[in-house]
Image (cartoon, rainbow, N blue to C red):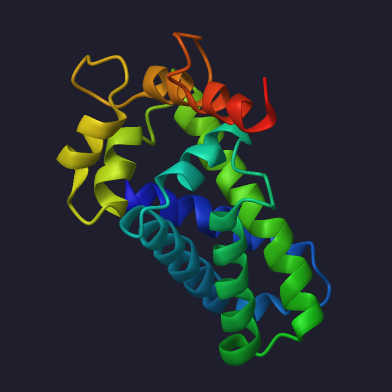
Length: 178
């Protein structure tokens, strides 16, 4: 799974670097490394730090909601690395990171939701980024109690079926009085 993620990152970074006149093509390998480290580290940090709701929020926004704390954390880590270690200007790093990370996550979540694409699996991702605590997380996230965590569970968490207020959207409605 990590190999597929790294390949996805390479594709996205190489394409983005080629389209950006402010970034020399010879920096692409450094940017792939920085992006991989920031993305994987940010997702692991969110999973291990109790940010599961923010991770689930990525699903509802297809990984492109720049206001999501997980995305903001990853983007900020990447900006810091691109300026301090790769040598990009802050403006270039900021623009590049704010476009690249949502693009990568959007593609990742699109692949996760596509039943015909088996390059990514939600259980593998949860296990990988939870530091091996996948069984505990599976128990918490297996909303349909079928023994695995899949798109059906994510849909139920976010608001796919209204079953008496047991999903994230129903819980959020209570915050606003309806």
